Amino acid sequence: MVKTTLPQGVRVLAKWRDKNTLRFDLPIQRASGQWNLLQKSLLIHSMLADYPIPPLYLVKRNEGDSNSIYQALDGKQRCTSIFEFIGGEYSLHASTPPVTIEGTKYELANTKFEELSDECKDLILGYRFTIYVLEDATDEEIEEVFARLNASTPLTLIQKSRTEMGTELAEWTRKVSQCNFLQHGISLTTAQARRESDLEILLQSMLLTDAKDSNYNYKAISMREVMKYCKEIRGNYADSRREEITSTLDYLSEAFTEKHKFLKKSNVPMVFIMGNLAMQKDIKPSDFKTFVDSFAGSECVDYEVNTGSGNIKRVKTEGRLVAMFKSFKDYFELPDEEGFTPIGSNKDAA
Image 1 (cartoon, rainbow, N blue to C red):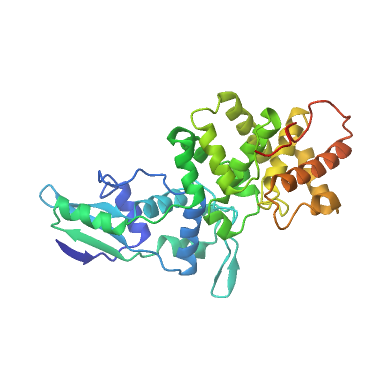
Image 2: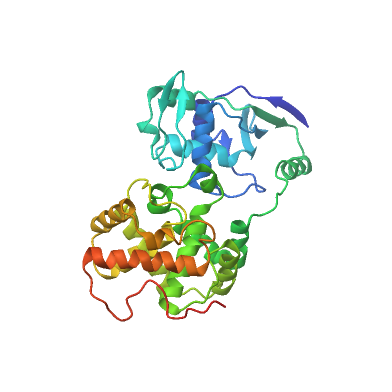
């Protein structure tokens, strides 16, 4: 096996991809689409901010008498994420930090490639990875290099939750969490987004919806309680429940088309439940957003006392829900109605 370097930039690599000179078809490679939107967005930010990016590893093979092809051994997700971005297939995550280039600050959040400045576009297209090329490598050597480059790291609790809920439900939640509301409407820090807090929020919202509709009993909305919930819904999450979650997320995506300062991690599950109730009352998404704007600008003492330390406990979670619900009813002048509530009737934690 011979290792050499390849001095080519993104513009050339994209042309090679189009001509099928650069391929992503090694059998040992993972399928495309493994990265979430934040991972893709931080890669683009790293290219512009000159942060270190791991090298690409390609396997060079001869095809025919004189043609050479390159198969991606390590770097498939990086390459495909960049090609998708310059192809206009996605906007950068709402938590993508700005970048300063030669004294000029550029905002990147929620932008597509075509919306970037010419300077940013040129930096992306001209970016040169460190590229290592393996030539005359046997299948065994290629497999060993791949294994060493992809040595496993311990799973986080949110990653373990996918195992608890099972493959089918994990795929569904992965797809649902890519909605505009969770990717562009909520106000997560970059660190929270990197820890997949969008998925954590989705699962907390699912749990609270089941508590509201079916009296699901829970002690808190901590990740350990979410893990327990994931185990209980494995193979047991009906289409009707999925439709309710999806419809609520669609409603909220229409209401919040850009990052909203109130939609921080601890507040989003509350807004989700209120959005679900607003949808039941045929309240327009734009009117619901106006309510959230009003609530965020008010001083709701009953809500505030249930924030801060221990806010994931059931008593504080439901304290925030009840306080926000009262403001919600007052704002829309809704009468008291049996069964119309943000929490279930079972108040005793298991």
